[in-house]
Image (tube, rainbow, N blue to C red; front, side, top):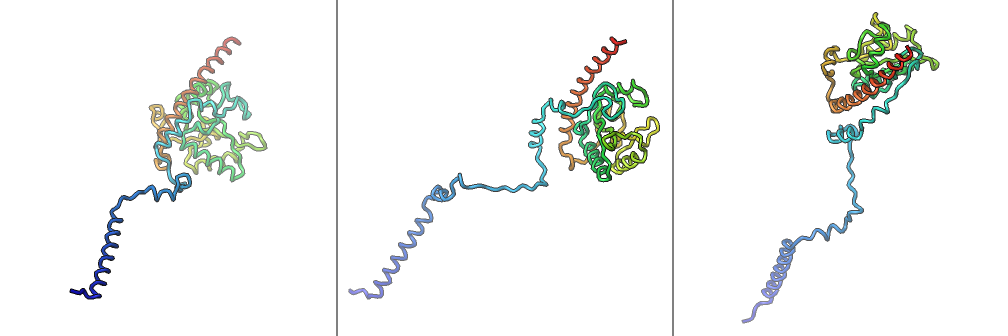
Length: 267
């Protein structure tokens, strides 16, 4: 029996289609070796670029690393000045003038005050920031015109007070009432308490901030509440500051004893 030609042709076409489909199916389920494709992107030429927004806040682990880098010896790098640096008798013990010795929130307020005064053409010098108990007691023994507070009772002992003075032609100007008023108002506009409002003692170079806390609160170990969004790691910063303050307390306490012995020999 003879098979018609069109049937033979149709059979041939179907056979070819079946082979093609089988080949594709076999390819679809065959093992996939990703190494063949990865060779087109060698590791040494592929760079992943990650863009970090500068407004992002570092996480706690990064903050801890930064704080850990700062050692117990960092307090030795704080700037200090000696007696009569600003034209007044300030005692035998050195004065700490470093803004980094202040409570972070208060420190930033003082930085703003300095900038605001500069914009008004007033140059402010920092006379004293953190003050040890020994230094506070030295002022107390020098008379009430210096302070009414003994060690531990001043805001300086908690990094929440600062003394400044305007500098005119390289000279500290202590008695220009008009100039002090401009500086005092600028500080009050920042929410600071100004010593120029006091009568006993009148202390126009003094600014402080406690966030509503009293000396009793500070003595008990409390610190004013501040915006966590602005200072997310304030607890770590304060713990480090307290270590530095303690180191300075030991340093100046020993120095005070030496000064006392020297004075006793002279007398």
